[in-house]
Length: 157
Length: 465
Image (cartoon, rainbow over all chains, first blue to last red; front, side):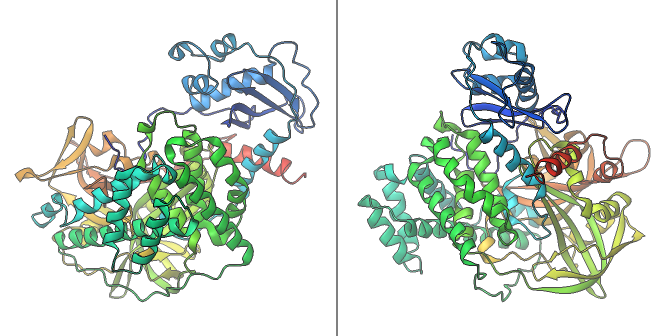
């Protein structure tokens, strides 16, 4: 059945409200679940964390590329929070499917279910790329408002 | 109600036009580098239709080149223009159909400057790389869509977003880009919405050829009565359109105010209202059911007001009574309608205001329909209802009077609610206007809301560098 509609089917999945104080930026982008997690102690500091889809390799460092002290052979609390917040934003099944977690994805309910199924290794990567994606994300809030008619928005509900 | 029943049937030739567009859209699934003989035949039919028009020659050249596997960007501009023209013709036929059915006079064409805006070289370069990206996308095909086809365009997109002269193109490209990114890599081609994606591709290509000049405006004053907000959003843009009638002396005009803001995905639900501090007065007028007294506000010939805040709350009104007065299909009130520029015409833009009553609301397999005796019914266009409007199923199914916009999509007419009234068994008639809940959020914003948190993060991290 060909879809003749110009409009998108409305997504009935209710997306939850993420905790932006703790994790201001979480995304499924290219082949990574990546994001930025606030430091619990220093308002100026943020941690940049990612998991790679398929390999499940992961890393966490400050935006100045200092490795996170919590990485001791397993994903640190920032990485755990990253998955938790991604589940709130995208739903557990979508996160698991994006990361290419094997097995029955409908059984995945929590960040622990995902962590248990991932055996990746710590892979050091500069934080720069993810951090610039975060800044680009924040830049949306700085863009000028518009008061002109935008017929192009008719395609979006 | 009798006249309106005519919209159950498509105007002459419409079915063929819809079928041709669908067949054309199918070329974008494998991509133009991989067409089969059926796709080639479709392109030939397209060329025959335009043979005696200015697009005849470019389409002829395009077809010959594609058959030889020579792909050049100008050929794809011709294809985009041809498909846009087919939709423009559909828009005209459908608008005439609905206006005739409602006993409303045809909308006169306006003399608008037909020259594109003169853009600085830098902006032209960004339009050039947009066309190039769209060209690559058409060659690759949606079925082979991959992140690698998308990411090279991100730098250009960021530049376009920062340029207010390109806002129309920017909001479209941003929505389209992130929708494709979410769908990539395409695993099952059956999940591709061809009509929608090719629509977006065509609008992007047409916008990347050139931008219309800024609209001509005149300053208007008078009493603006609002009926509610039509709300549109994608992950990175939210747009409010207040619909109303502006009265000044003997003149009455359907008009709209559009206010838009960029956003990020984390700002969703009620918090979206917080992106619109400049809309406070409009929200207040809707919530209080008061008119706005406008003082020298710029308005384009199309009926679009450019909101400058120069307005005051005026007398209390009953919006449902006014909607009946202006928009009942039986009424003979003379109102200047909204005018849409020819280049923007596409059936999705049809929005004929209408007041409806004496119906029963039925749930047909989860879809709401307004039904009248004699077998005529109109589906409620729930696919157009943004959750921020508050126009929920439970409210609509209880409605007794309905003001909305007649819409056309996927081959049939439906009606999008902007205002409804309910008549409870006990108690008084109640009126609900689309988006009236916005004022509450605006007056009492939640503590630690996403908009405030991200603004704080932006000012701390963006300015530091």
